[in-house]
Length: 212
Image (cartoon, rainbow, N blue to C red; front, side, top):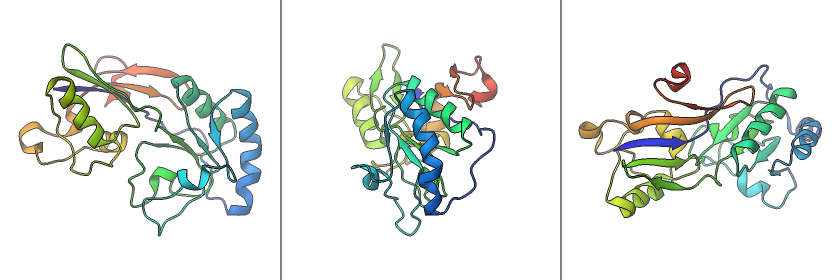
């Protein structure tokens, strides 16, 4: 079957933030916070009730502290967050599942804006057996959802806690790959937020340079 994934692909923005030491993170996030607050973007800051849990790395040996964690529930939230990050020259990192040994899900450095996609968790299979998958879906949930909806399956890895965003866009090898290929091979469309905050739907014929 084919996969149409609602994911988040962020192209490099103008001017990435250099690694920040902890005492500068709060200063950087102050003006960034103002921008996000004015646009009603849901966020968690250092000191917020859920920040420590959201910022916990998969690899405890590589802890990084984000300047802010964005918890979008709409594509507009994502677009607005990217615009604010570009305005204040903060590195943006999408986080699907956070299953990264190098802590890239937290930006790979201190002071990044982490856009946590956990609220994009829907999986919908249409009549053509094309699945629309939120960028925060984990592999185990994806496999169960498409099987329960119409007894379908996809090639993917074996760890159920891995997020589909990073897994699919970096390949997606699993036990069935010799027969069905990679998860990446099944993607027919991507909903993407560009570095300037523009939202586009990309396929092999629409924005093909981004799709590939």
